[in-house]
Length: 122
Image 1: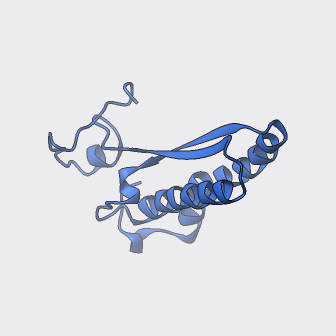
Image 2 (image 1 turned 60 degrees about the vertical axis):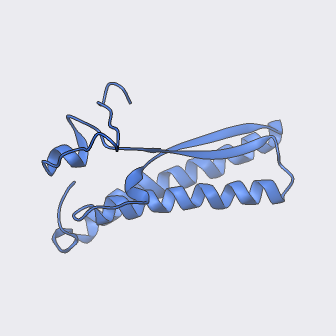
């Protein structure tokens, strides 16, 4: 949801982080154990360019996406250092979405150089 950080209730922040961070971490923890038994596997997270280039009124969402992006980078390094070369982890940072999402909610123009997609294309 697009709003000022000062307008968030604690419960709203908790919900965003539970959906975007806590749940993916817990699922990944379980999946890595299964992948290790198979000696292979690949995890891909869908994040957002907001993780790297946040806009006003996107503080909670952007920080949750930055958390998952950095988590994946860190665990990828742990897998490498543990010699688990058949296990990997990547992040897809999706850009602006036309007809939905933050840009639509804030009525912002998406510049051509930035690129964009519709929900169906994603």
